[in-house]
Length: 462
Image (cartoon, rainbow, N blue to C red; front, side, top):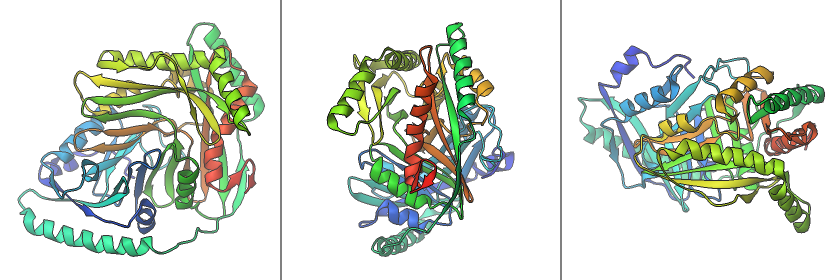
């Protein structure tokens, strides 16, 4: 991934070329076949919960990077890229040209050894796109051509190329490909229990002193393998076990991938209709139906969990109240995932006007469920107390279309891969009543999705 903003030459180039986006149906192909075909290329994917829409991309037609004023900068570049774009095909809106990418957690992100090729903001328009909705699939090819070039002949060539690719994918979809054999060499947790207890104590004291109401603190696990982890296998396991979450993959360079299965939606924008959510408050799942329901009831009745959730819900409501009418349920409900359950309040907003998805991202990020309240006080304390930079963990990732609409999710239950190493992240919301032992146990639950996806158990290969 480039580590410099779009330069003046690139800006000038966007005024002399235009985007062509061609799509056609591709029956009998799923996202597994597309991602398998794309191995060795830059790859991107976002899969909706409950076997809904799945979108993926491969290759790079355009790349947008921002190092300052990042939300506005990416939006300006995206609007320039999509200006006068020509779409050919009868696929649904989801199959048209769409960018994949996201943002670092903090504005002052600086690449370190873990996030060495990443930047504060980065989006890619893929060369190839795959879209699957309600069992139907489409392929899309995105190219940039000179402004003075007639498009008719180019469009014919692009359609023929897509037809060839579709046949190749249909053949690939019928083949069974086994996973690569990858062995775990080590799994380490750099933060000790004592260090965790200490930073929780500092956070609680700051909260009790009135400096802030809530802060989310995280810790890291580091895994080493004998070769690069099999991200396709990991995504497949996340798809099977965490189908009620958004699954995402950002792989700007082969062997450098950020992936996860997140239950938290930051913003989904369609026209003037915005969906978001407050997701805060956690409990383990029970071994039986009765014990599971008992744990859910305890969470619903727990003053600490309800207080933490109320802070998130009220903060999001306040951030959205000035831009539209918000429909909020009277009380949170329980969201049950494979290994954990949360308090959930969905927020639906009918906006007065829509300035686009990235404007909403700047308003909503960081989610108070992953930053804290008030926002700036929490961010300052996170930078002070967390020994490992978050990079893109807990930040917005997702898709942006030509209308400046799309979906951004919060990149939790996630990991970053770099060659033969993988770093996993997990956090917990800290309020005045937090107990360090309980927050440690909660973070262990949140490591589990990626550990399971990689075929690992706590500290040992599966």
